[in-house]
Image (cartoon, rainbow, N blue to C red; front, side, top):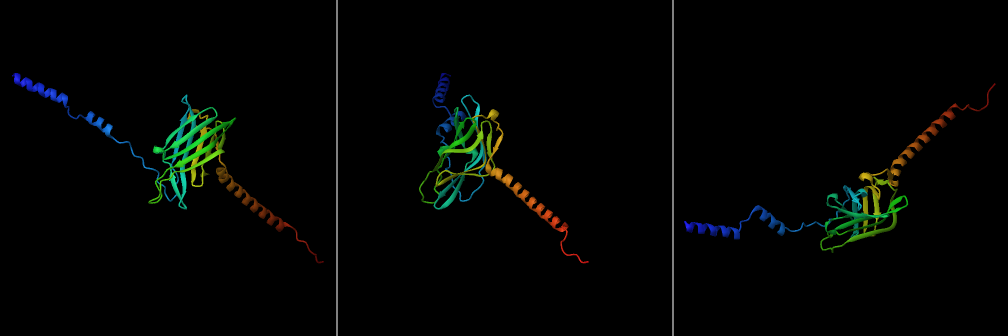
Length: 250
């Protein structure tokens, strides 16, 4: 009887010293040995496609929304005398930024800092605009044996996408920004507002010139055509009803 108890206690201590693998322990080891996710660098494409649209919101220190931007963003790279394209995928974009009294910053990056697109907003009295734009992208080489490159660009001391404070700038047409000789930024569509974004809702829209032209020019052409047709009809009626002049025979 005592021998059985001794064997039981030995087995108990062995189990305590060398426990079996439980599901929790296996999960813990899996977490410890799991590798960080590997992010695929941007891949340039030879053909152009419309970039997918994403909405990005930045809040100030008090938790109030101070920047809201809705856009489709893409890079246009000039390399080897060819044009290459890469679009930002909103689901992969990391949005960050800050808002001060007269300056606000919106930064859109990809994991691993593979690309970045940064807008610096400035407020002068009642006018809000983008005063600086920086961009870069570090894609996979465009050809076999080509070196890795980072294509970057900068637009400084500019006044882009201006709107009154509390209003939003909107452009359905394509906006092409030439940031350097090797990198252009393409935005389509675009709507943004900074500093004052009550309840994360856009204010009254300020239309870009490209949209204005697309909307107004057809109306002007139509009005001109109608005017010309009206003049032609009136001229015809005037000539037809005008009494003929000449000598009368007696």
